[in-house]
Amino acid sequence: MNGIVLKNQNGYFNVLLDNNETASCRSRGKLKKKTDILVGDYVDCELDDSGQMLIKDVYPRLTVLHRPPIANVDELILVSAIKSPDVDQYLLDKMIVLSEYAGINPAIIINKYDLDPSHALSVRDYYVNAGYDCICTSLETKYGLENVQMLLKGKIIAFSGPSGVGKSSLLNYILGSSHFISGEVSSHSGRGKTTTRHAELVRYSDHSLLMDTPGYTLLNLNHLMPEETAYLFKDFRPYLGKCRFNDCMHDKEPDCAVRDAVQNGDIQLERYNNYIKLLSELNSEKNRR
Image 1 (cartoon, rainbow, N blue to C red):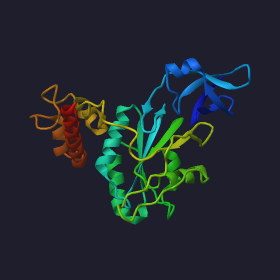
Image 2 (image 1 turned 30 degrees about the vertical axis):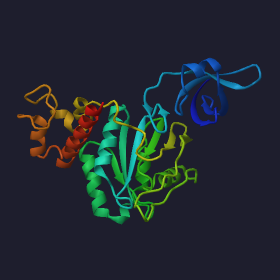
Image 3 (image 1 turned 180 degrees about the horizontal axis):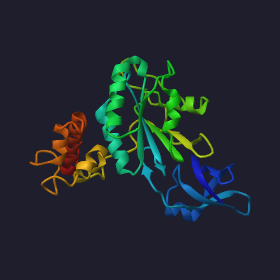
Image 4 (image 1 turned 90 degrees about the horizontal axis):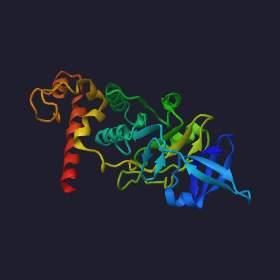
């Protein structure tokens, strides 16, 4: 019987089976030596002679995220607040790039719209112009909440973002229940206090599972190479391959189609500046290896 792992509870795996029932499963001894079992894994289960459900095989993963480890995420909803804590567009752009690198479709929510509506709409337009789905929301005024469901595409959907931006509260609103613990923003640091500490998928509908994740920590730069980065900026792609040099990094080279697009207003200047900042970060990381 096939299923999907919803949660790992000290070696017992809560699995949603094909018949829409959940079962507590253990891993077969041979499988433990072969691979770790992650939340989001598609698995093959069977009953042993004692009636215990066992996971006997894990199907190949389409995607893997880290911290916490999650498999087979179809969509990553990146949540930021316009204020308290303040939006960090470089961090958001970086997460979008890393999501693209992992082969996962990203979408963006700018929450706490009521704290600075004009800035929130400006940030929304920035990401829409870059080619991404982005909406503004406010749990205080209910602004934009009817549009959240429109973003949810795929079987496994993970929400990520700095603590205190309202991820858990948004998920509770979507689910219609207080399943996730919401945090608060520290008055001392201006940053949110982390409340999500483990990976768990929660049923949203017959076709979707939702997850809260602790902060912008589930992806890293370790395997991303500088020369791969430009393609991961979606709005750069129409201009790639049109530069004078085939190995153009779109930094200081002459006759660069990407830089020309920036000058013509076809690529937003802040997006380009964030690309250069990320490129510098990747080159520094590469030199340290």
